[in-house]
Length: 553
Image (cartoon, rainbow, N blue to C red):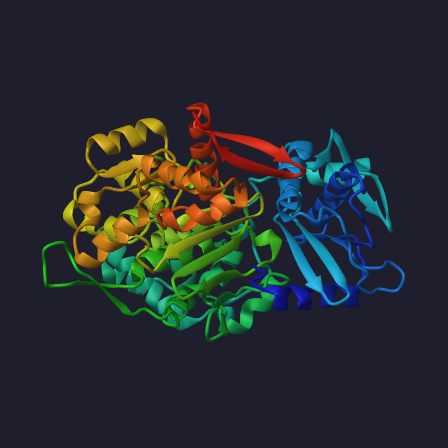
């Protein structure tokens, strides 16, 4: 994941040095007249080529001269909002997928756009308006039958983790990891005599875990219990977990094989301080850790289990001051995260069945679909915001919050420990400023948990008014009555006519802090319209300016 302009510039420099191949296309000074149809075709071609070459992404880059290999800038879609709309438009054209991201880099020599393109899904060529494209040197061409068949013959059922590594042997295994695996296997399978498990030789034990077949090791075996030095057996996959620290201090560390041990080593790098919460009407604080170890390990293990290893990418855990972001390549394989929150859905299949079965045998994950439910419920029990998922056609990013977003939300959970998860999900969306369904809002309002008006719901005043500080903050967030703002406008216009910007300056600071600048502008517009409908004020045009005046009886 690209975190800042420095990383983006470094990426661009490397792409220019290596110049074009079948998954990178540079375009010079493209202006706003460039056909979006061509963008869709390049998307199709580059996505298909990335699939065929098992690349995690392809790049279409505007603003780089094709002959001199230098920045010349681009004026394509200069408005950022209009530029991002291209994601939705491209998905409409392909019918299946769109850009991972559209990066905008401003350099001294001009603006550069980097369109990050995911590989075509396995077994499914990407088309534009029904036609599949490919690269032929620097040109676009139709995807030929051979390449079409190569993609279509890929089956999503192919289990990368179950493939046998012919030249792998017991000398490639980490015996410390194997020893821990035996102990954890004994804990999980209490019905099996411990002495029996300890008497199994290594290959018999690995057979029980489904990590070996006929005395030969699978890729999953090397991933979980292979030596650090055995990672070359999985090449070109990096076989790494990466921890990154981003903020006032920056650091990173790679953790290699065996994943069975390295996931805990990664967790130990995360700064996990204690956070104090003061319940309502109590002088005794509740202390909780910033991150729950089981939540983080379950999340990391899910990344390991569900990653699309054919895309040759590492799992990246990025630590910010207030959250963790866990990134892995591969789409969300079965359904959507919301399907699993209440713990009622069981997945029918897995991307890496061999790996998933072994990890379940060792209690690393829950293959019955309970993992996501446990993560959510643990966050609720700890009074923290719920996790967020950002899902694309080729990657999943899970955000786990380590900071209280809305103190009223946390105190509500402290006071109502038996709230149903559906209510907590809705309250979590409200504290994050996200919309909720009308029927859900109506139910929460009847229970006295929220107040306000759609779409600006807020946690109820009964919850918010738990201390002087929070009460003051709550009042600051609220608007005053409409009559107050109307009278302010009438008093202003009684003295002199005024342009809209003057009225805006008068009222902007009078609204609650919960409103955005754009929301305040809309509210002022609605108040002016209301006064005009009451025939108290009128508007006239003077050139490009609107001037408001009082209507005198």
